Structure formats: structure tokens, C-alpha cells
Amino acid sequence: MGSKKIVGLTLMGILIACANIFAQGNMPDPLTMSDGRSVQTPTAWRTERGPEILELFRKYVYGRTPDKPFTLKATVAEKSPNVFEGKVSRKQVSLDIRHEGKNLAIDLLIYLPKGREGKPVPVFTLLNFGGNHTTHPAPEIPLPKSHVRENYSPPEKFRGAKSSRFPIEEICARGYGLVTAYYGDIDPDFHDGFANGAHGLLDAQNERRDDSWGAVSAWAWGLSRIMDYLQTDDEVDHDRIAVLGHSRLGKTALWAGAQDERFSIVISNCSGCSGAAISRRRKGETLKDINKNFPHWFCENYKRFNDREEELPVDQHLLIALIAPRPVYVASATLDKWADPEGEFLACVLASPVYKLLGFDGVGANALPNPDTPLFKGRIGYHIRTGKHDLTSYDWKCFMDFADIHWGASLSRK
Ligand code: GTR
Image (tube, rainbow, N blue to C red; front, side, top):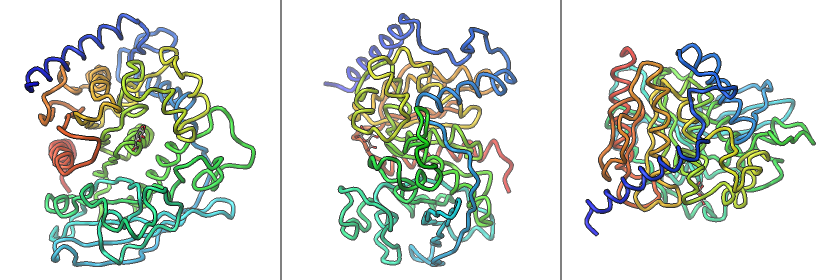
């Protein structure tokens, strides 16, 4: 089949999907309050509709993160000023987070470009799936001390195994830094009854309710703790810290960015169901699939909407809208049907009116772009890459081009 025909079919798919969705008449409008009032000013968005949507996602989807006091101590565990032939410096920092006598350790791996004459570095922050040692073969990077899933065991076998997802040299060559941590340090990715990780740290026993936080919320909480640390690191540009995530960690990046405004760019890669994709389409993974296969990711209330997506008072375009007016980028892949690329793009289209209200262009298009043709028109960026569910150097190139545009133009250079 020629590429024109594929694109034509996809376009038709989007149009039919839009028509179906609006015909259903139950797609939540970002600019209408639950009580029917219309949201007409930036102030009404900031003070009423935005907080209302955030609360709905807490109550029905990701769960409520406990608002409890903790202390955070950072210790530099390793520093190598000359890696990648002296072009890059590496730093490993251990975070020790404490609450009522319990503690949680998160190990950070940080790469920064050299030769910036002391100027703070804009960075991309992303969690990894298998341990920091999977991002690069260097023996100085320790194996994780927290629980590791079967597909990354035994850990030593996976040293450097995911380096294609972390093109450190390319990132640093463009003047950016990379901050990563293992998501299992924050919360384990299996149903442990919410006993360990951030849940074990902050939850009181027998405290679980239908809107209590799941693992995605815990990982997002961990990203905010990494942000707490980055705000104290003088080598990092505190106004230019992006959060990025792939797949389940793409869902996490969106939820972290929606809650924590210190992330000045938010990037979701192949995030799919309960990430960027519109749930009401029921294409690819559905709420029933995700709640059945990953019962620990979301709150208990979310399960009430299995096969009843149209009753959910939110859909995922509202999660993207919560990031407004900050720049957000959504990336899909042509073969990643499970993540519903058309649904991911549709969410960008449906979030765009909020950006407009706040004085900016959203995605700036109504039709799915051709593969490998990124949309950089407004503050919602989008591309669909040829290929499978993955995070590649092509995706990174697009994210960095997007960051060049928004961090270069919208914030004063330091
Ligand atoms: C799949 C899951 C997706 C996606 C992916 C991943 O099995 O159905 O929602 O998150 O895992 O994170 O790798």
C-alpha cells in the first residue's frame, strides 16, 4: 500500500473518530465546567476549570497523592568530569527521602555537556525501566538495589542494554543534559498491596480508599522529588527542566507535568491508554485491559469505568490541557496500534482550545501529519514516527528541536 493511501485512510479515521465522538455528545469540553458554566477567561481557567479537572483526575484516574511532610537529603556518590572523550561530565547523586522514621532511596544519574563556561544546563528528566546501568555500559554505574522486574533480570545482564533510548552524546552535543533514575527505586511495578516504595513510605496502614494513589501517581511524585533536588543543583538551569517518559512512564510524565508546574516542558512518548490517547475511542488498549493487566497503576475508582468510558467525567485531552500554557509534546509510532496513535493526536487537537484561551497556538492542525513530519506550530508539538513502540534517537531529535524553539524563545537566556 502506498504511503499516500495509508495517510488518507488515517485521515479518514480521524475525521470519522471526531464525528463519532461529537455525535456521542459526551466528550468533556475543556472549557465547560461540570455545572455547565462556560469558561471564557484565562482567570476562570486558572482558578476554576483547571483545578476542577485536576481534582477529577485525582479522584477517578490516578488517585490522590498524600500530602505528608518528608525530608530530602542529597549526597553526591560519584563524579566523573570526563566521559565521552571529555565532552561530557557524569554525576551520580543519591536522594534519601524520610518520613516518620522510614526512608526511600532514589539514585540519580546525571550527564551534563562540558564547555558551557559555568552556565547552568537545561535538562531532560526521565525515569528508566531497568536501572540506571541499562542506559550506558560504564561499570561505575551501580545495579539497582530496589525490586527489578523479570524482563530486566538478572540486572547485570542488562548493563548498557537500553543505551539506544539514551543518546547521551547527541543530547549533550546539543547543549542539553540528561537526568535519569530507575522507576523501581520510587515504587515497584507489581501489585505488592501498596506495601513498598513511595506507598510504604507515606501511607499509613489500612489507609487505602477508592481514590488512593496508584503506582503512576507514585512515580510522578518521585519525579517531583527529583525536581526538588534539581532546584538545588547549580549546574542545572532551574527554569529549563523538562519531564519526558516512554510508555507507562509517558503516562507518568504527563501526570507529573500536570501537577508540578516547575516542569517547563512535558513530553509523552508512545504513552497510549491513560496517557495521551482518548479513552472514549476504545481503540487499542482499553480501560478494561489496563485495569485488568495493571491493577496497581491507577486508583480503585478507575475500574468503575471499564466498558463505561463515556461516564468518566474526564478524558485524556484534559490531562494535556492541564499543562497549558506550558509547551507539551506528544509522540506516537505508526506500528504502535496498542497505544492508538490517532487517539493520541486527537487529544492534542481537543486540548488546543485551552492554549488558545491562554493566548497561544495549540497543535495547529486538525489532521494527523504524515509519518516523520513533526508539527512544531504551537505549544503542543506532535509527531508520528515510522516504526514500533520505542524511544529512538529520531524522537529525541524532535524533542530537542521543540525545546530549542520554546526554551530559546519564551524564557530569557541566562
Ligand atoms: C503495555 C501496556 C501499555 C504501556 C506499555 C509499557 O503492556 O499495556 O499501557 O504502558 O506496557 O509501559 O511498556
